[in-house]
Length: 392
Image (tube, rainbow, N blue to C red; front, side, top):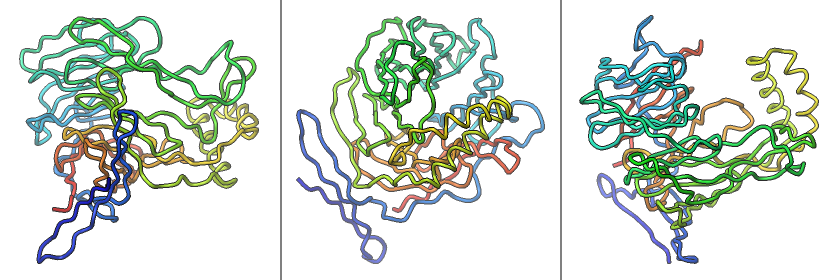
């Protein structure tokens, strides 16, 4: 069955037409997107931000490594500062209201925040990957409580369901003793943890990342390596791998309910792209581990193997309006931020693309307001809220 949407703009001028095909397949709905509802041209953000944080030389508006962010229902802004393991809360106009926590192992403290979500009115839920625990913090009373998560595995959280289930996955390991050598896909359990009782259950097992395993069990990055991207909706989660434009929606129990596709082919991996990836990767290794480490790794990277197709997308999140955002692939530019994001409604219908300013990484979206972190030419981060000009 074909579903078409058409509308008229001012003066009865024809609007762009969004087209998709919808069919049932083995109990799941298959949505194949053909053209976007907003039109082919990407939607821009305003050049002047509504709110900009980071102007102080010191204090809570000074940022080093911004991790996660939220736009709350009352337009307050929440961001995590990874350098200090703090959660900072600002008013809708950017005035600092409070800072929660700090680096540590005690109650209300964090070592490695892997999730941030609103909960039950005025509460925030976080997950600490290193300490393996959930913290529920009330912004009203200031009270907090902790709930332990499974102690086995290197589990990181990636979102909170409306029923209070926090979803976790294993991001993988760089050492796989006993695994057969060669290029292969790793898999991960999707674990649901109740933030009230701490009860946990595995609800799905899905592909997580492609890697090359050496005979001694060590792993070497592929160029490019495909992996999973994922995001949590109130009533389930999206999961897709970057080698194909098929993104699954699974319900809160892990059952497949919907598959979203786009009619797009991945770009081929060329020798020029491979060489650029090698150099960008070595630059990152030298930055963190020194030039000697980069020199030692060059031969391994140049030996390959190399993939044949560039990743179609590399990042994902679900905004406050239940829309799925997929950031376009940036390979071979290691560490780059996607400049173009495709947006889908909660049915999986492709609404259109959004063009981000240079060096702008979106954190959350509510309506037409986009919260993100942007870095200047010197790498200094600023937190901004900008308006998105969606066609009416």
